[in-house]
Length: 90
Image (tube, rainbow, N blue to C red; front, side, top):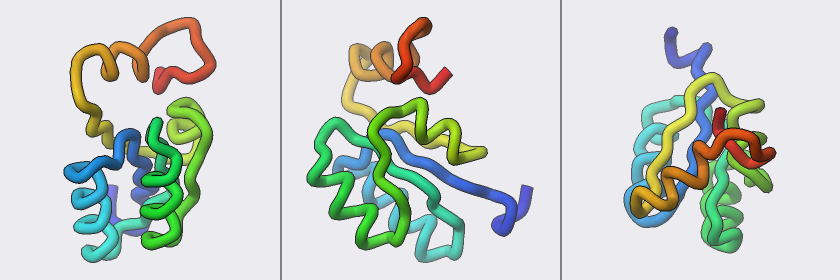
């Protein structure tokens, strides 16, 4: 997949995730969507990078063909990959 085909979404945009997203944008990758439990941080970064801020991880999956997750711990990872919920990345 080349840069033009990549539609990248981020789940988790704290300090590390936000900087990763910025780096990809600086290198001309298309960022489509951002989700974070800190909605203010997600909204600020989405505005900065000209992409959508979405309400759930599942919406990020729907709008992206690559999803990068940068979350704080195993419990957060379990939540975003929980089966049988509307908020799952699966």
